Image 1 (cartoon, one colour):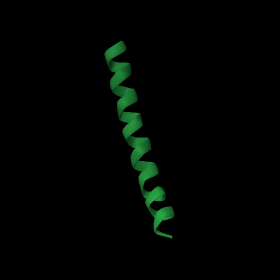
Image 2 (cartoon, helix red, strand yellow; image 1 turned 120 degrees about the horizontal axis):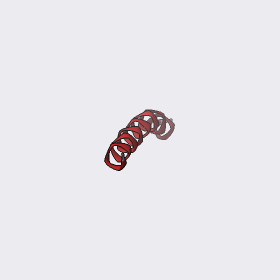
Image 3 (cartoon, rainbow, N blue to C red; image 1 turned 90 degrees about the horizontal axis):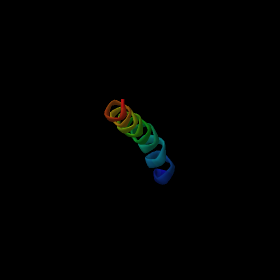
Image 4 (tube, rainbow, N blue to C red; image 1 turned 90 degrees about the vertical axis):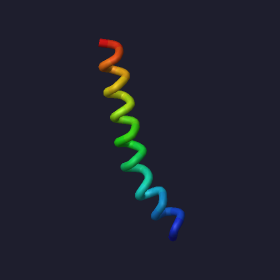
Length: 30
């Protein structure tokens, strides 16, 4: 149960992190 819970918590964080990195890359490129 703990493993699924960790994945459930980390996925949104990972997605937010990727989104911020993506926005930064787009800013650098533009």
